[in-house]
Length: 267
Ligand SMILES: *[C@@H]1O[C@H](CO)[C@@H](O)[C@H](O)[C@H]1NC(C)=O
Ligand SMILES: *[C@@H]1O[C@H](CO)[C@@H](O)[C@H](O)[C@H]1NC(C)=O
Ligand SMILES: *[C@@H]1O[C@H](CO)[C@@H](O)[C@H](O)[C@H]1NC(C)=O
Ligand SMILES: *[C@@H]1O[C@H](CO)[C@@H](O)[C@H](O)[C@H]1NC(C)=O
Ligand SMILES: *[C@@H]1O[C@H](CO)[C@@H](O)[C@H](O)[C@H]1NC(C)=O
Image 1 (spheres, protein in one colour):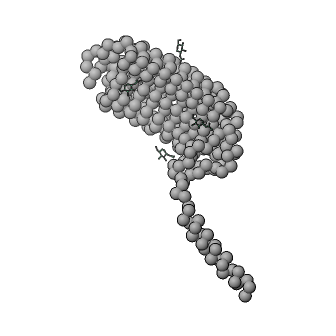
Image 2 (tube, protein in one colour):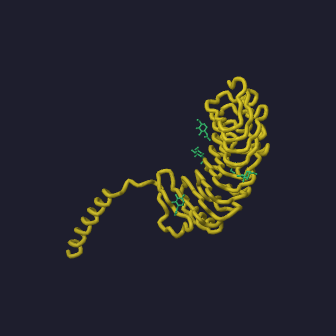
Image 3 (tube, helix red, strand yellow):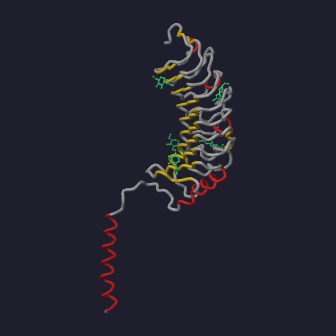
């Protein structure tokens, strides 16, 4: 008798509680930051969304960052964006990215000179966009990026690369996916026409702010889908139709701030 009279109100209370909590489920994002913030240290989870979380690692070294990112990987969360900002290392290598599900990677204001070959293993299926800004990259990281088979944007801004090798994209898995290539703000000279030729999906080619001092005959061979070409702020003395052969879809061509005299028609 006594026990059942207790059980009834308890059940009622539970029922009421359930109703109350059901009403207060916040319409939050599908992917949440891990609750234990220390696990990600020195990185931080900054944004939650229905597409994934955004994480940044600021002002740290490669070893500490690797620990944070390895812990992050155990949550198997999709990462919409990872930003590495003002860190202290010159070689980017190791397995720090291998287990992440990562879509967009920004490496900013970090003095990397080299990205080693296997750095992007594992994220090659998911990575869509790679930005490296204000680095000390001396060579285009051919072997590191060639496995990025789902990359649509490659943007290297403020670098120390002077040459784009002939085979930069020859064996590259991004040849059929890359749509925007920016290599800007450095001392790059004119790339050999063979270097860019494999990029058959390319729409935007941006080489502004370099030291390109001449365009070669058939400089843009094979780039039939390019719509935007930015060669501004270089040292180009002249542009004529023979340089622009295959660019039949071009709708923006910026060659301002060169030493240029346009010659003939550019149709
Ligand atoms: C790290 O830097 C990024 C980019 O500047 C910024 O958005 C983020 O808030 C910074 N995080 C911390 C913890 O300072
Ligand atoms: C490749 O990228 C596309 C978006 O461009 C995405 O929808 C797709 O899921 C990615 N592939 C893999 C295996 O993640
Ligand atoms: C990712 O890399 C592995 C190992 O190099 C390769 O076998 C696989 O085809 C690559 N996947 C994509 C989508 O590029
Ligand atoms: C480009 O070359 C000039 C002259 O050699 C040099 O002063 C400058 O630092 C170089 N810029 C870069 C981004 O390497
Ligand atoms: C070149 O011109 C295009 C179109 O006007 C513009 O969007 C782009 O910013 C210019 N490039 C630079 C480096 O100013």
